[in-house]
Each structure stands twice: as C-alpha cells, then as structure tokens.
Length: 179
Image (cartoon, rainbow, N blue to C red):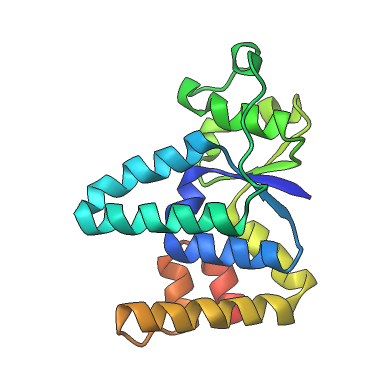
C-alpha cells in the first residue's frame, strides 16, 4: 500500500515517528512532495527559531532516510482535480501521480471520501490507520511505540506513559491499544 502523508501528520513529531515506524516495518510505502515538506517548514516558524531549525533538520533527515518518498505531481494534473480547499489539491495530485492508495490526513473536511474515491483513493485518519496496523502486527507496533516513547522521554526530560503520550499526539485509540 502506498499512502501520501499530509503535512498535518508529518509536522507532529510523535505522529510522524509512529507512521514512519510502521512504514519501516513494511506496512506501507510513504509518499510526499517538496511542497508538503515546505508547508511543514513554514508551519514550524510559529514555534520560533529553535522549532524552525529543528524542523529543517528533521526534513533533511526525512529526505535522507526516505529518498524515494518525495514525489512531484504530474505537470498539469492539479488543473483537472477538485477539492473543497484549493490549497490541498497538490496533495491529491501527488497521490494520483504517485499511484497511492490513500491519503493519511487529519483534515477530513478538506478531503471528502467521494471526491477521493473518484480518483481511486481513500482518506485515512492516522489514529485509525495505526490502530488497524496494531491489530495486524501488535508486536511490531508495540516495538515502534516503545521506541517513540523512549525518544519522547529522552527529548523532553519528562517521564511519559504510552497512553498519555499517544493521546497528546492525537492517537488515542493507538495509545489505548499500546497502553
């Protein structure tokens, strides 16, 4: 399965780490575009200079770790596509030109299922997607979750519990499963 990761699922660190951990297990092939990564960079400016610098480093690492994931939309494709928010058409264009099966996003209203189905795509919310992967591979997803939890504890200097971390990351079903 190929899935485009929308900016809103790449920007949050824990969500991104869980999704890419699942991809490393072979559960799906991630796709994005330079524009999606640029949106992440621009969003990080709101976090201040340190947040922006961190995002730039994370984007560089993402590109190095996933050299085949960045996919440009086919020329002219965006002109023939429609979504309620024209600013999201580039995400749909990447999915179509990359032969993706799904778009993983938190923005349900901007990616109506009917419009995506016309292109042979599904809209998938990250929590439901990751929970579904846990149902298929509990051990693998538990390992990914443990790695993400250890890194969150290391970086924050706090002691997080799995369920609380996943809930804060807007992954409550996954957190309950991993809990």
